[in-house]
Length: 216
Image (cartoon, rainbow, N blue to C red; front, side, top):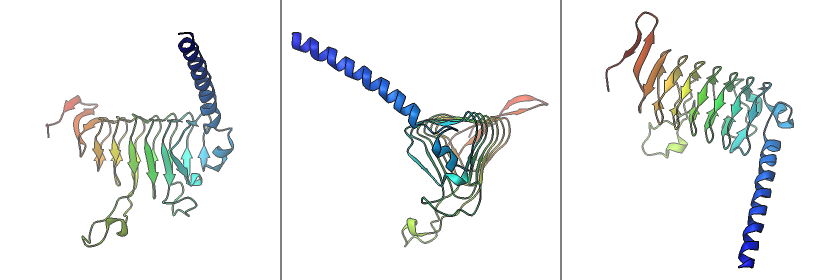
């Protein structure tokens, strides 16, 4: 009985210690403007942070991050296919001021991904500007071309949990995209869009206010 009690006390003490040390380690390992790794970015604004642990970050010189932006844990953030690649555009990925990128998300740029100011996302959002061709059914898709089309997300927009933004997508200002939606084209300013592919279900105009679109 005494042994069981002693074991529980020891486990609790060790657990508390590990928790405290892990919190301090995560804070120390995060990328902030004063950290050495922040200098490798094309731009890393004051007050911004990339929380640790992160999944993949490479070719930082082609990534610009504005001020006051927080990028959550386990995020993949990259430019190009492999570390050390010479990209054709600069920046490849541009994230504005006061953005919040949710935990477990991925922003994978090859040509141009531009995210405006005050854009927030839920967890596990995926944004990419590159896809795969499937013109020749006899060849593995991985060996076919990988077309790139720019992606832009307007300031003030919100992307819900699990949203996927595909190449060529243009999301306007102050747009709300529902959870698990797949954006494949243009979404106008001041709208709500849901579905796969995402469709506008509500639209705001200064003349008539909010109006509902037909169901799809």
